Length: 208
Image (cartoon, rainbow, N blue to C red; front, side, top):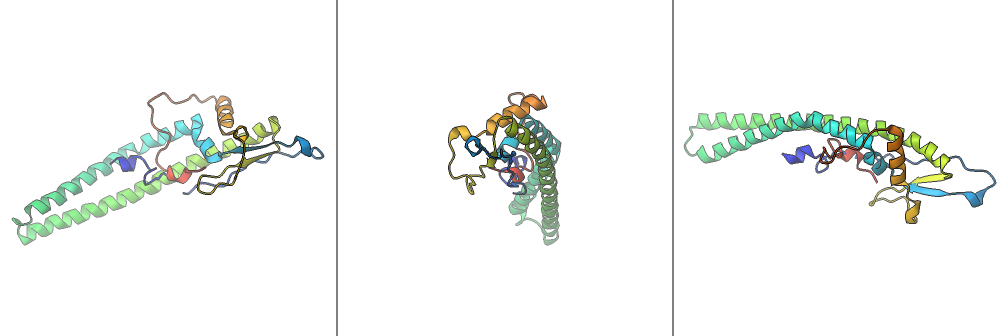
């Protein structure tokens, strides 16, 4: 049941609960309008591309993996029960058919509750992880912008609702901020082939 392992598809996961319109503004320099420098950043994307986010969301994916397997197992049980009923209903007594149908209905309700609990828990944990890291990146951005002489850093928004209609390519400092944040945090990049950073709760942090 891969759709449950990747909340991006349904996550989806959410990944939306978090797309907070983050923007950083360094202090302007009075009397020096000619020296003003403006940069853009895809803030939510920057957060998710940090080594810290990749590490923490991989941990969340591992945390919820057992529950995903339980949901997969329960879903297979339901499919088997449904198949048995369809194949045997002509040969079952009314009481036997009723018992199997009741068992199927019970399993289906159990799966619905388990899926809802999984979705709520994974989205809540994903949102919490995103917000915690986003706050740290936001604070880091203040220092970074000041040290590099930017008077303003504007969130680019996303493809659907962009907040920046035009900017030159070199105005985008997203990956420069990510690299600088990773260097400061000291958290290494995940090993190749590791768990994808897009994990339970992804839909909540599908940002720009």
